[in-house]
Length: 257
Image (cartoon, rainbow, N blue to C red; front, side):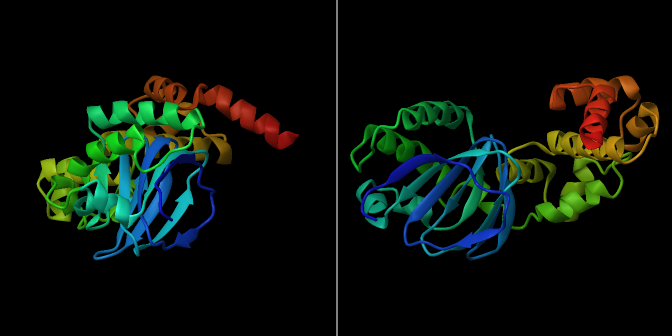
């Protein structure tokens, strides 16, 4: 591989592993994917619409799409990284959060890639992409110190009691971090804030309960941590596009067919 490749990809919902001789940056555009980085310190995280991951050449990584997803992927030969002065950005594997500037660039890059035009080492899109990513990926950045956070352990602690979940301060203390550092690490490794993540877990549990039993919606709301049925209905409709009652009817009708 002698030139960079910048393209949109969708990762399948199957567990896969890979190792390659070029650097790679994966940034979420829509949906989510799980990613493990087995480099200097194994990290397990997720790439969503507000974060990304850098995978240096030679680092084995496992990945799996979590439902429909679109990722912007930049494959960078080591020679191109050296020529553009960005080699330091690929010194270690890491997850990182997107700031406002990178989020805007993501959409511009997406439009360029969708146009289907070929890219080469001197393409301004590639140059701009690397120039914007380099400060975020450099080993000195704050986000590089996220390797101690075990996202799966945080998930397990939250899932154990969604009705009365642990607050961020408690989760941070258990992880041995300040609240601010825990928040920054969590966003870097999952692409969402702890609060948004908790909300998604609650709604997923509610959806599961709606499928598995005929419990009243008010009871399901309390079971997953909402104050009342109205609060669950509002959040559920925002996330799934249907009220819980309509969602249950639709799934029941589909099962009957």
